[in-house]
Image (cartoon, rainbow, N blue to C red; front, side, top):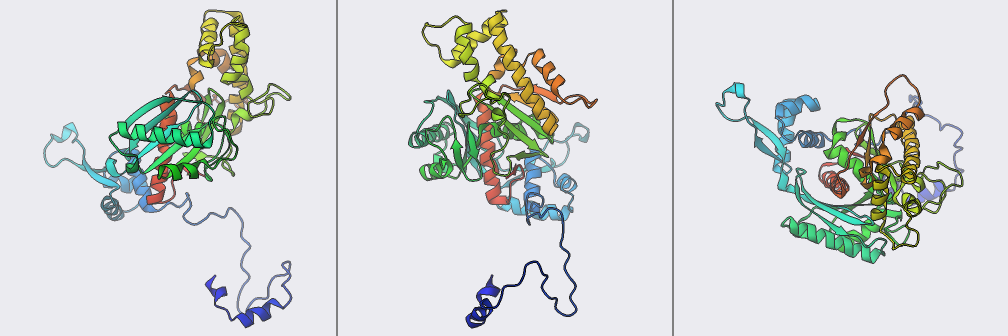
Length: 447
């Protein structure tokens, strides 16, 4: 750019009056020059997630191991021991790593100095993870080593205005920090997850059942209110992050998480990285169409998967099945608990509701397997308490709908961490943002 700024204005003006070159014709070459090749293949930006700084790679290696020797880091990262020594010294001086003693093996006799390893300095940062829900909010405080310092749950007021949502976030952050013995200002960042369509990169919420407005710039508004960096994402992505950072997904390169509660969500990890799509709004499994002109979904369209298996879908049929028409209204959780009890006791009408929902769930899971071929499919969310929803019939239906390749279907795991699962994912989002700010592009996230 400076080359163009420093040109003589008169020369530039004279040049602008000449005819523009024809883009279809190559420009003449200077004497002795050869034509440059046109090139092909992907154009990868410098220092993208494919080329992370060595400093960051060393930190991630230590973070993943918990405690690890310099010699083992050199092997794992494929760099020289001298490079590890230099980079580790830099990270220790910066306050990100610390030296820790690890116990000697029994065969060593316990003599001599204990071996020294590297670990993440736990008190370097603390973050808050928050899951907003329409029935109960969850919050957790984690230190930089991923250890829990505090957790809490709070009742939800359901759909709120932006102003009320900011007040809710402020209260949750303050209460969680106080329980951890910290002030909110001592936190390095806040991660927030909520259901709906969320543009994580822009920090905007095009639509959520918890916000009364549309296309809300929630992250920027929350940062202004809290005075802290705020990272935002769809709640299903947070479950995938929680599994990637703290659960069974740590050792799986490719896995999918399907959440079933107020809505139906999906998080997808490919090659150890969270996949969001080109616009950051992908993996909306709940809004995949399974019936043209079918049941009305809360998104306003018809025939979405979640319109057949989410809370509100089951509740629509539960009152009639339980014979409660005209009786005092129950909350959705109470209604569904009663429905499940009747189904487990053998009630035919209640069973038919769960069986129908299970068949649609099997259809959705089969589509996930056929599209992405994940190693594991993890089912999570409040509805995973209902065994009738993922009974053997459901998994058998999924197997029949998956393409016959002669190989076994992916492993299905059912996890029910409760609201803290989502909050842990939000905290992982905040930890990733802190790492990115201080060490470079976060490995676990792909735009």
